[in-house]
Every structure is written in C-alpha cells, then in structure tokens.
Length: 231
Image (cartoon, rainbow, N blue to C red; front, side):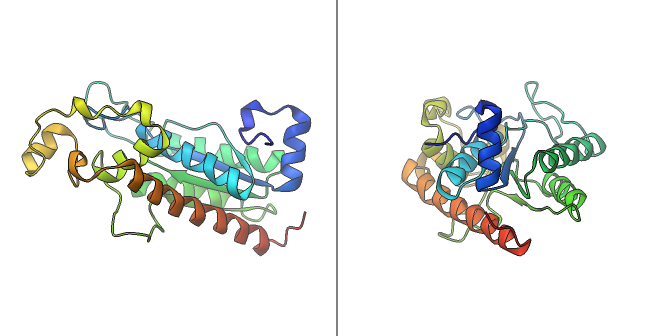
C-alpha cells in the first residue's frame, strides 16, 4: 500500500500523494490523566489512529500528531497546556505549512474533546481560507450518530475506542474497585461517564471508529469538490 504517514515519505512519495489526493489530516490532543487504565496520551492516540484509518480508506496524508494544546493541570503528570495564544499560533502555522507543501484541504481532529481546542483549529482553518485551500475543525465525536453513545472522559466511549485502535495500551485491571456510580467516585477516579468495566468493548470501539472515519473521509472529499479540485 502507498505510505500515508507524512514523516515516513520520501520526497517523491509525498509529491505523488499530494498529486493524487491533496488532503492532510492533523490529529490534536493532550497529555492528560485518563483514569488508571488509559495512557496519558489517550486523546491524541485516538485521533491519530482514527485518521490513519481514514487515509487508508479515503486517501490523503496523515501529519505527525500534536500532543500539545489547551489544558489545565489536574494531576501531577498532566501537562498544563500551551495556553490560547501559543496554541493558536502553533496550529495556524501547521496549517499554513501544509498549504505551502501543496495540500488543498486540511482536516484537524482533536481527541481532547473541549470546545477551546476545536476553536483553535477553527482559527487555523480560517487562516488558510483564500489561499486556494480550505479545511475542517472537529472534535472526534462532533458528527457521530451511529449509536446513542457519546464522547466522555476515560469512560466507555474513550475506553472502547482505544480498545479497538490500540488495545495493547488499555489495562482494565488498573481501575480496581473504584466507585464509578457516584459523582465523588468518578472525580476520584478521573472517569466521567458510563462505567467502562461494564459498558466498554472493542466491538463498540470499532462501531464508533467506523462512523468517525466515514464522517471525516466523506467531508474531506466534499471539501475537495467544493474548491473545484480535480486529480
């Protein structure tokens, strides 16, 4: 299969990829506590692996993921983020550089599902408008509608996704006997939503992932059509 990871491409391979499908996919996230059973890079890992699947199915190139964004610390091993101004500048420059390379559509997906991070990506999209390019900013579950399941924090949605995408990084035995049926218990465990010990599964993660992949891929193709791009 053709390479889809930008950092692994030789120059002629990148030129060919852009000529065939000038869509760049950018994963954004955080380094944040996600309970005891998920890695601190969970947000970015989800978005990045979803976009790899999207590029495999719909074409395009996946940019190296960005783990830095907008975040307030709540555990000693959680980074405090870059703040709004620096995050805006970083995301904008990433998008501008991709347009300079030749991409015509830049898709930014954040697995750190907070509006300020999506808004930072939206401002990056606005920065490339009018340069013969366009883009899309979204949180991973913004347009998901296959089941009633919705985004959460380290609960059944996020746990199911990583069970499907990177199962070797999930360790459910670490949750132990936390009381996740009360607000106090959820706060202590860092798990907000349905109890992943009961409701999470790799099968549900696959269903969620397929829905997101199809949403992102079809929207990318629609944006290419809107700007009049033809191979």
